[in-house]
Image (tube, rainbow, N blue to C red; front, side, top):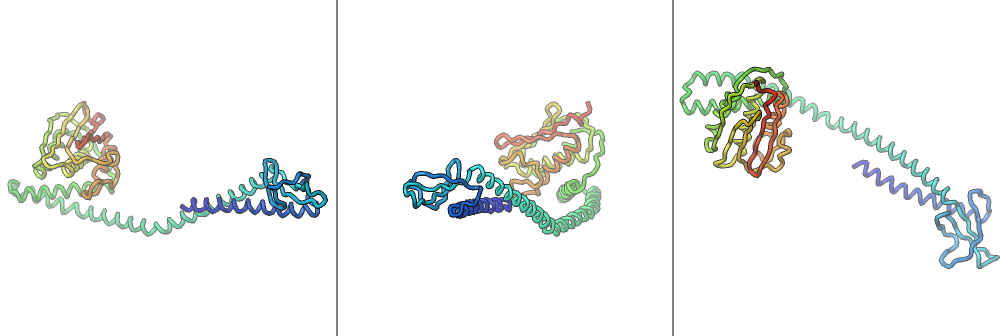
Length: 328
């Protein structure tokens, strides 16, 4: 914005200075017509033309000139002229000077803007740092009560519907806690052997009762993975969470393996910007925080898994390439 304003100002300034240059030449040529004491100008005798007035500045391809009346010869006029090439050089010199001024002021404006930005954003950076520290402290403090609740729930009657509901809600809070922790702190992954089906069944068992109106299809797969189980579980959790939250009434979720890929397909209301779904804070509705799929991408990169999302009409398909974490 500032650069555009400076460009406009200097463009107008250049036009004004060029007009001043022409005006000075006109006055100097007019003065020369009386005293003939300036070596920059030449003279010539030309026929008088009706469309050319005396003491006006004219320009042609070869020169800038004025016409001066000759009392001794009314049919002729004295032409005082200045070479066009010399005038062009003067204009180029003028433009170079203006360009240097423009570049200097642009650099000065950039430096001032940069310093002002640092000054203006410094309180915001401090606030964000304090907020991040505050969130980390809350996440750390939540870890103990959540763990205690889950431990005590295991000691209670698991067949009780109220206990099961509390358990599911606590696990949802626990997974959200893990997501926020993963978002703020990058932890080193630890590889272990586990069956893919165990993780899938564990997450399906968590979501299916809450979204019982959806049609669930889960294909069995006996492959063994070698990667961080906890991080992989969070990937499946976030994918199924999105598939459930943004599904349709009486929709479906299908989990299958084709080749080296785990594919989660679900019905939906459609996605406007499929290329943006893995970006941080991107969401197409008021629901959620917009970090679930961003965490999926981050964890997938950490585990060397390639996620890919495709949309066909209202059907969403997420493919996880597991070739680098599958034990043959």
